[in-house]
Length: 511
Image (tube, rainbow, N blue to C red; front, side, top):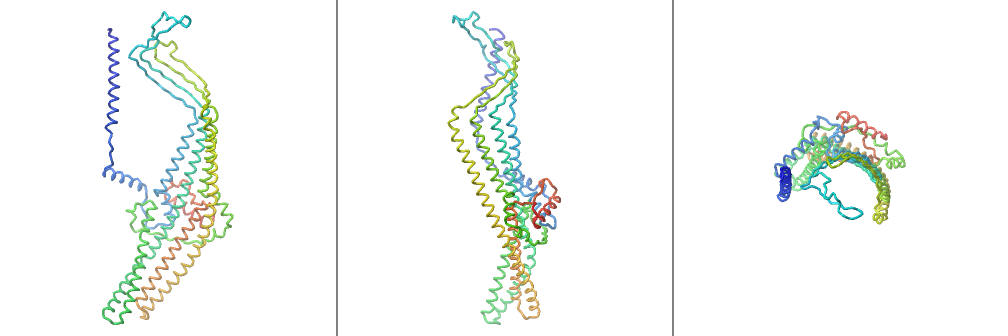
């Protein structure tokens, strides 16, 4: 055996050993795989990283917060709003990448082959059928490398990719409409929480004073009962009334106390950092009559154009129609073109560098059997999307009329609650004067203070209901605060833009 043969066998044995070891490593890795649950330390570290990511870049709360700044902070820092923005970005990115599927394919490849024995073949004469005199012969190296640069383009794939890209574009628009809807809900939640904080802020001092007065009056009544200065029933009735007033005051405090945490969470502040001495600033209230004075027909026309749910259903119907076109496109034969340039290191090749071009037409005859069913399914999808669009249109119109009626009722209820609160405040002042001149008891003062606090609370509740009804009407009309580039704007500029948008809504302007 020659030295070259020995070297070739050694090389072949080395390659075999490499492949055996690689296969063994893969098999042992698969066999040794075990489930590894997350440890408490890993969970704590991940939770800490998430909290740092959520609060990163969030500016600290100032001493006083306006409604415009609260909404602006929610738009910029709220985690749910960030999630919707990321979903929209992913949908937009999917659309951008789908456009590249329409381009032709240009593939660069390189391949290596190796044989342990020579490629030796026999041949025979095509006329006589006898073995050729050159038998056996070698026509290829045992090892060679092939380089190739191939260009290919399919007309059918181009059509499928074209309609798929159009569908992805509509899905990106759907994600945008869903983000608009989430913004509507966010602004509504911020308004409600803001006025709950304002109510707690306004009533906190009154609640504390009324509770202290009730405790003092309760101690006096219990002393009177213990000394038996009056009939037994009278002190007990006073105690019953005082205890009931204290229960109402405690219920009000319990109802309003979580409002600061709710508002801070909506503004992107961690619940543990929601404390502090920050206060909300009550804005001047508008007349709330502009939208009630608009013709209902005009509001219907506006809602049918701007409502995000209706827009989403329109895009869904368009996606269904594009799917029908994709199904019909499968009925056509596939026509593809290819061109490639190649180079091989095989020494037996006389032309080791060559170019080749071709054209191919193909048609799946068995696929014709599924075309009627696919076409029927696509048409059913279009009919379903159209029906959903029409149902959404009726629902939007119904929501508009209901939201407008609720808004009108909320305006009326707030006016009534405000009048009652003003009367109770004046009554409280008169009762305090009567107590000072000893014409009425302290128990009467506590009862009147409790009544005044309740009426003030109902006023703020009616105001929060009014803000909620206004936001619901605004959402139905599709008139969210239009702020271009809101995620990237500085907080002061975003606050100014939100204030201008809210002002346009309060004055009845279409944004």
